[in-house]
Image 1 (tube, rainbow, N blue to C red):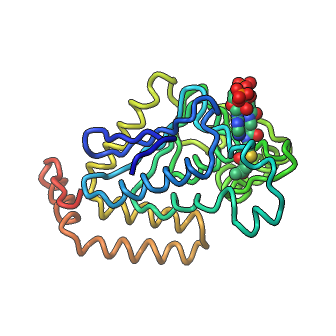
Image 2: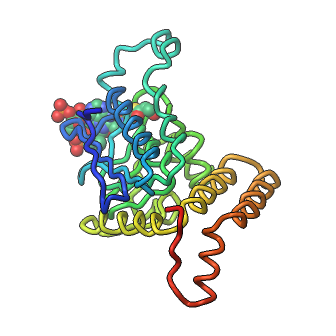
Length: 259
Ligand code: CAA
């Protein structure tokens, strides 16, 4: 598939890198862009050679939200009946391999929600996060009111969603929205480093780890602990567990079969 609004490349033949590419609109997210992003993520997910994906934007904007111009004339009947605007966004969550968001500049509205749909966020020191939908007379529509409180707690989430204010990278790290903050010029180096590290591990363990952390994020404790235990036990049926533990005991680097 040819892509117009995203750029797609691989790094070291192992990491799928997707760059949002609507610079004049600060990467505002429209249906075409989200269709392309979903298709490219699915293609990487199905590609045996790929172990991890990275979604990024430009220095100025990861994404400034859903495309306001495209939404402006919609009425309730249009968006509800057609399930418009965010109907194709959940594709991102169906991807089984890890997806890292490398965020510089604005991650607002749908841009912040897109970043939160990724498995973790590495932010440049110029990143700004926010859910400013309230200023447009709407509320977040791609999971913002659900994922933000889980990520940063109710008080800060209410503050962000009700005032529409932006949070800088330092505050986002303190609040737990992002996993690391790095200087802007190091953003891709640091993110690709993390992605390549993940690619080197047993993919069976990586998929199980992602699935299990998501269970904690989305469900209750007892169910999550049981789910984790079952996956933990199951991994003892793999060659990669034998290899990983044998390599440690014999002080050598593990050569995982499933990567
Ligand atoms: N949709 C469409 N176009 C957008 C956009 C958006 N979300 N955000 C920015 N743009 C466009 C601007 O209209 C402008 O286009 P023109 O040059 O043609 O006028 C261009 O990008 C550059 O933007 P600014 O001139 O405004 O740049 P700035 O540096 O002065 O401000 C900004 C940057 C603070 C991000 C500002 O553009 C802004 O507030 N954008 C809107 C952010 C927003 O409200 N996002 C939420 C959208 S709703 C949503 O996402 C719903 C959901 O939950 C799914």
